[in-house]
Amino acid sequence: MKKTIILFVLLINIQTQSQCWKSISVGNSNSFAIKQNGTLWAWDITLMVIG
Image (tube, rainbow, N blue to C red; front, side, top):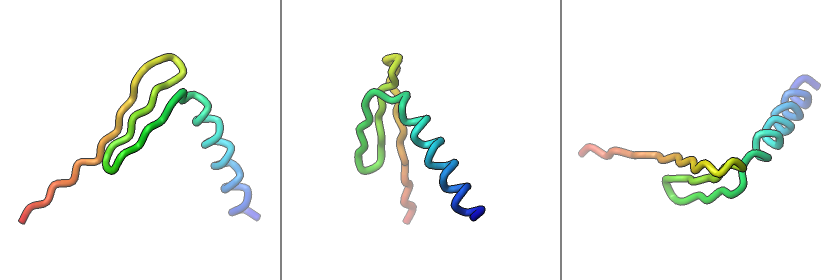
């Protein structure tokens, strides 16, 4: 029962947070999103291989 309640709360939180994005685009190592207020957000994963 406790796991079900935690999962339910997480799903509600994800839905609430997702309503502030106007557009989302993802690539292999980066993501871009435009919020409802018009600001552009970007995320990137940089992998460094030493060898």
